[in-house]
Length: 288
Image 1 (cartoon, rainbow, N blue to C red):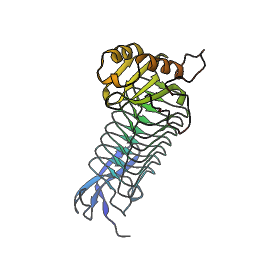
Image 2: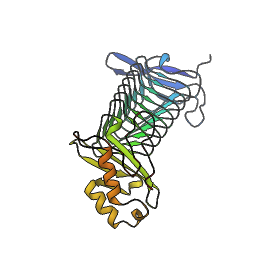
Image 3: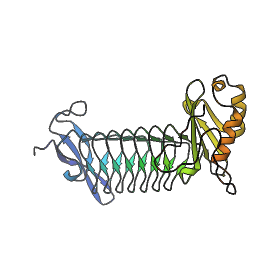
Image 4: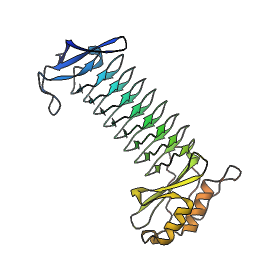
């Protein structure tokens, strides 16, 4: 196999006891680098595949047993190390860190100060940014996003277009699906700690209710239509023109209380058609 880069032994960087070498491209990679231009740093040629259009750019570093393959790109000041893999058309950039046995695949990305570690995976078009962290055996895929200091761990799966942000923590075997938006320092330990309702309102919005760190319930409506407590929701439903096309605030609040009861209450099903469900099935039901 023909080489597409060489190690520049006169331009090195030390990370702990490891010596990393700047790379220089021997070929043009359209839209990425021209022949003769410098790239980032790797510890050895085992870190960056010579096939495909994968590349390490800027001041990014790939070392230990980490591997970049396919058409993947590692840019900025990103660090990829341990036995991590960045493959396919994935991107790691900014000041992100990917380590352990983590895998960044497909068109997914880690940006800003995002961290993916342990045996976590990003697939599809998923992304982690703004100090979001995905760890342990968690998987984030489809178009889901973890951001704003949120942490996803355990065996959790974040799917579809879900957003985990605002210091929220999702763990256990939780499956978050649909257009769920979980923020407000939520503490989600299972799929029973959150629910979605909708679509409703004039914009066909989806409402997500979940437990926060003090055991209370917070609510977020996608497209930033509403965010707050149950009391705030009741006031919003009574005054918002866009909320007139959906169920009453009483029905919504009763449904939330039924799905997210206090510890001494048993979950029930209400007339709003929302029931407790776990596994990969979406907890989303029509409220109309």
